[in-house]
Length: 193
Image (tube, rainbow, N blue to C red; front, side, top):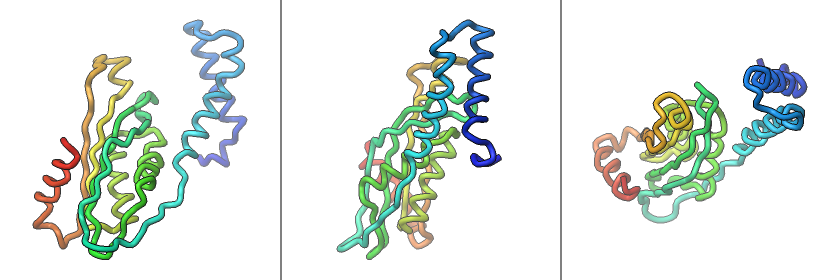
């Protein structure tokens, strides 16, 4: 069902029913919260989803190609299993083609924000960032490392507040297949992992 088929009023009514049901079962909310929390939740999701919209601009590389690294980009996402937050960092490494394209540094951050702004699995988010950058920049090599702390593991279940999940994904042009190991090693060394 699309967002246009499921309107703003229906979404808020569904959230309101959830809040009321939680209150009936656990007694968690006061009158002000029962009245206004559904609107706040709805506003949060709309704002969060729209925060990812941007225009991806790229520039022609002038001069010799070299590895481009942007590390420790903070991200916030949600686990699609529990709708609980994931907080962490993303590090990106890519090698442009000779006379190829580079992204403005803010566009790398915006790419992460765009892809992070929905409920998902961290593994899928990592691959999606790699695919997005590979498709937009057409580099020789791109690698992404994501480190995430999952509230679903901290607040419930195994209750591991210090556990950090690390995922990585890479994609490369067939012309550099023989050099992938050394490119990956160079990226890992520069990222510091």
